[in-house]
Image (cartoon, rainbow, N blue to C red; front, top):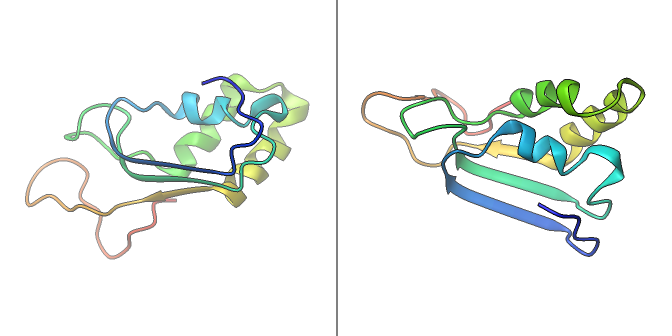
Length: 104
């Protein structure tokens, strides 16, 4: 995704094959500077039978994408901006989240 300077909020719901590196890449190198919130609801890095994307996955991806002097600031921004949520629960299989809807 290219830089969209005026974008302030991004909602992605019921997404499959959304990689943590793609989300982290939006925040590296000062990109998307005005972005206040990225809300990921029922977002999966692969199919719906695999794990949901968690904020910690995005934080780990920063280590691969951002230069070492930038990593601390980008991880702090991720903690402030990114919200990963579970909305739909499956009866069986896949990533079943118990007790909370926020995925850190």
